[in-house]
Length: 312
Image 1 (cartoon, rainbow, N blue to C red):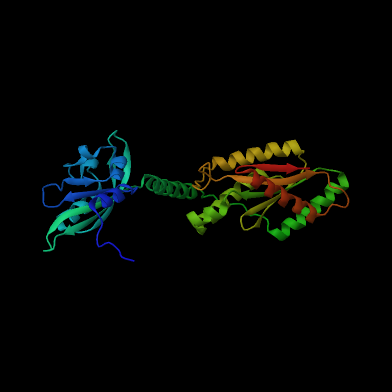
Image 2: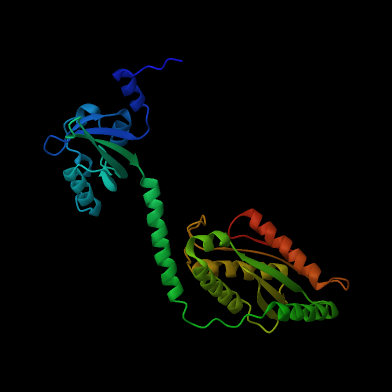
């Protein structure tokens, strides 16, 4: 197979015009490095036509927004004839701001003299905004955690909870009273830990646990951190409707903590709650109630964020 030794300028220009990124060439031998070529991608990126751009200095899209730290790095690279990668605030023809990731590379003639700069320009606004939102979320999270100075009340351990649940079940069976067994899970908590770190996750669970305990503080209530990120509640006396109202208020209280969670659709931490409220039959066991509560919280999680599912 015989390969051509070179491609035609027309084919090269057509190929470059197909690129999504903006491609520019600036004359390094002239003052202010004027643009001598732009591809169709850069016209689309900037909103200007090639005729409007040719002859403009490379800093053209900065407008009056020159107070940017990375401009100094770009200017130094241009003066030194060096490569450079910066992200700048630039402005389109209609005045809208976008974040431009600009990579420049020097071009030299056979004698080694600098003649041009080739620029590759990419709109990275979405990425930059996500990074800014994440930094802001981290600041809000740390501020919220710093406010959590009061000691969190002790949460019953799992063994004690199981013992209390067994006793409450016997009482409910004997007196034909309503008994509720509930599971509470923070939504998307694995992703919370991955994004904010284990220490922030532990502090977050303390805040959630504190709020649950304050919501279920009667002698007929028992709360425990039953699993890594799961809380279990046993409560006597409330009807199914009364329990639903109680849990709606708890979900509102968790939202009011305003714990940032950038992976949540709401942008803050929410919880899902599942459980069962019933007058237990004689043959009902504590394990039966826990299994049904697990199934209910799983069903609540399937419904989406900030949901509850109470069955009877």
